[in-house]
Length: 562
Ligand code: ATP
Ligand code: MG
Image (cartoon, rainbow, N blue to C red; front, side, top):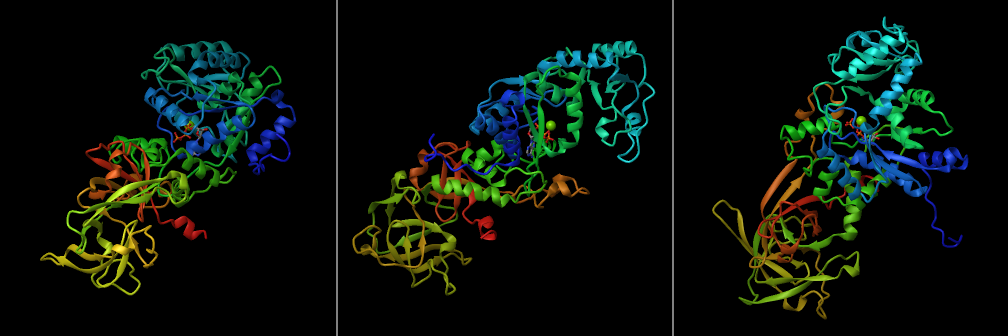
């Protein structure tokens, strides 16, 4: 590319800066390899998207490769259902991995390395209980106490380590620990546990072959090393684990290559939870409809809600990567979706709370066709046609019998434009015995049809409508925040389930939409004019249309950040 045509380079985040330094210094021969390492114990959420965009983005931008590695070292919680959904979600975001790896593929290599560490006097089998071990840990300012098993003969540890894996030893009776430094100011150096026994849960790939399972700290760095990862990017809570990560690599490596761990801030969002344990509880206890409930922060939930991959990427670009923990306002996520949907979603008419409007001077039995612009932001999106006739539905709150001065919609004596059609003057209404409005009346002005020569007369209000005869009934699901409090994780003295927002789902069953929507397909995005962005729920059928509200039109984030 010549200087002239080169795109202006966006400024680098701190991870890209470190990666570019490593390339400049010729580290690992300039090679770039990353991995995305989910544990297959749940569905991916928007926080994972942040990690995915980094891991795959670095590989893409620096001619490297990003592999997908399932961190499957805990058979108790893992399942193939999760493996499949994780793959689907990554591809939905537009990424493709180089290889698929499983930490469980390295069980033998890890075992061999652990055995080697025992032989070198750097690991030992400890027969104390978890409580005893915890008690001896000390605190950051008080050194720990050495285990009575710490200096047992190598042969004894080797024999017991084999027994830990053969089923002869009960769960919890023994662990393998690294022999590092019980007085280290870094708690992770105080003889960390490398292996534990799990006997009664088959592993989703290795079945009952293994009974001794490696801990995260022992498996993760070594897996990076076996694969040739150059940059192992993870979240900030692993920063304090990094010295141990490096210590194991030092014991393992026998060449110039070494993986480098870099940490960034985890994504937290207001009014939701992103712990897989808590999300699983919501699903299992039926507090949401499933992992893909549109109120969930999961990628499948957001997808069902009407978020597109572009909307997710837009959000991830806005939040960036730093070294500081924080919580992002959910209205920024919504704003990010709105920005994308505004330029892509087709405008349609839907009346959520219908009341009949009768144009008393419009010829009985007449129907005409009006042309609706699909997207005023993009001429290429074209137009579609909508029928217009004497009896229409409009929103109940677009009529007021006694309106205040600044009410520019329908009130007796006032003119309003029916979107894409005529100016009408409201003449009155009919009410039932309870005083509820059942019909609104107006007279139309045939000279004012939109697009007609000389129809430039202006009125202050424009309202949307559908015809009574041709409109289609639909169900609309209105979603609100899943939790009633800003940061559910922070309310330590309450069970998070008590903090759920009881009004997070409201179902409207009598919505009227324009007939053109009959052909809409699952997940198609629309703007219901004047209301918000909606998409077609997978539950929808041509006979029973179902829409989800993705976001309303009102942008609280933009308003607060003007
Ligand atoms: P949980 O603790 O809820 O099980 P996890 O962090 O253990 O979640 P993993 O499947 O281990 O989930 O995560 C895979 C990758 O995604 C890791 O590199 C992790 O750091 C990253 N990740 C997970 N949650 C977030 C988040 N909220 N923001 C950014 N990255 C995240
Ligand atoms: Mg994890």
